[in-house]
Image (cartoon, rainbow, N blue to C red; front, side, top):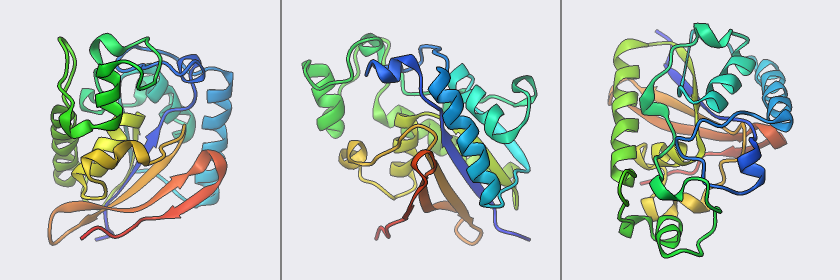
Length: 212
């Protein structure tokens, strides 16, 4: 049986990205540049010879539309999974993505000390839903190639869950629009590991580092 791989895709650009605002679980849409990025990503995926047995996405439109463009499947045919949604930033949504406020400063610069406000998620909660998603994929899609539509912060939390990053390192890791994380299942251990992070938008390819 061939090895199982996940291709975890960040959405294309939105107007909130250009304005440097926290988006969280606000249902923003791709702008024209984001659509162009997704189309360029689709061509790069074809050049890489990738095909997908299954496509699943966050229900937020920016991720679902990107997954649709890259895979060539209509949005209505792509299953969605709430575990793939962006981190819920609570009151930070629609505020500038900077470390100027004490809450944002801790979130971005000291993740291990971050205390979520009312209605917001902790990093631990986001990592737990990422871990749950990975476990389900390992059980239900063995041997398949899966495209996963997701978001920047949850992708960073996935890297923590996969042992690639420490929590306090996550904002040092670039996850640009239409970046793809390739993860492969170790059949013996039943766990995924990072193969590489592909900055598809800029055609830059980074070989995954090894974590002890």
